[in-house]
Length: 81
Image (cartoon, rainbow, N blue to C red; front, side, top):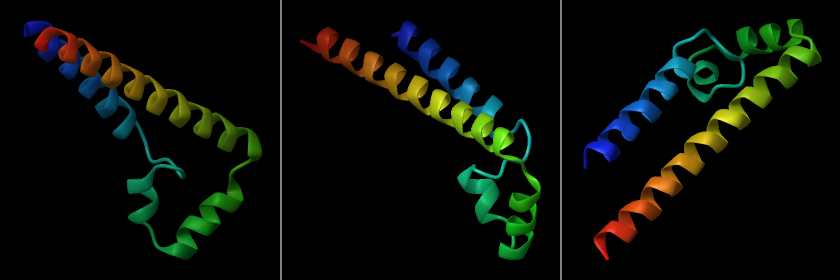
């Protein structure tokens, strides 16, 4: 039980690090909290390399969290059997 709590807290801390690191153009909450014209102006100022970097970080973090959740879920199912 302590293992699952530790793993959940660890995944939550990774989420918090990504969520509150800085404002990002591709993060849902950051995008939704802006006015459209402000968002478009910021997006026009960003170069393609920065967008690619931001997207790759989001893809990696989402993939990592999903894999961790699946591993914990499968372990929990095995423990319950």
